[in-house]
Length: 231
Image 1 (cartoon, rainbow, N blue to C red):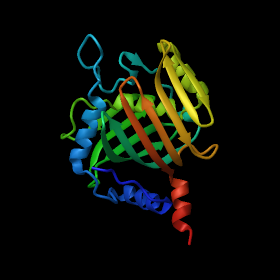
Image 2: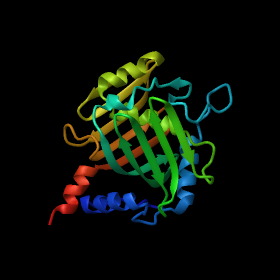
Image 3: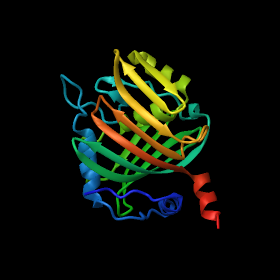
Image 4: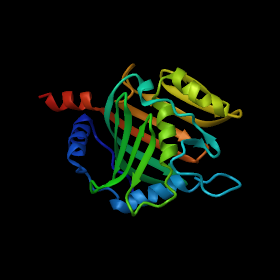
């Protein structure tokens, strides 16, 4: 099935407003799409030489944990709606998410095409808490999803410090980021957004360690509100 994509900012405004009420604007792949996506991203989510790792562990790559900073290290508060397209082994799935960041906590909520809450990830100085719908497979790795987000959005200096315990390095400029561990590139990202506005625009990245590619179309709440108010 070819995934639907948003056609413009008006669609994103509608998406953000409907997120607030828990409703989804499009029927795309039903809840089976979420299940398939999570099997897709979790297919290689075990640590070599042993059983599955704790799914809440923020692994950027198998056996390579990210030393999580604090939510406040983002140095801003964020409310953003996202349309996420994930691909692996020729399969593509689409789902919706929203992210809320304050100095006290990070919140990620994923919903299926019917607006049902599939997962909630809450991260604060007290630790990481994960809630998932009963129909989601145990292969889901919310910790790895969080690790990707931190590496892609948090300030460069913060990310470098978070990578240091694993021997990871970050190369970055205004439009791309690359992470290497042990001399191998494990994540490569290309970003298209205005300077200083990373939560509105398009992000494409490949987690080479886990073997998936992601495209994220994101809109911050302030942008959605201004677009909705425009004549």
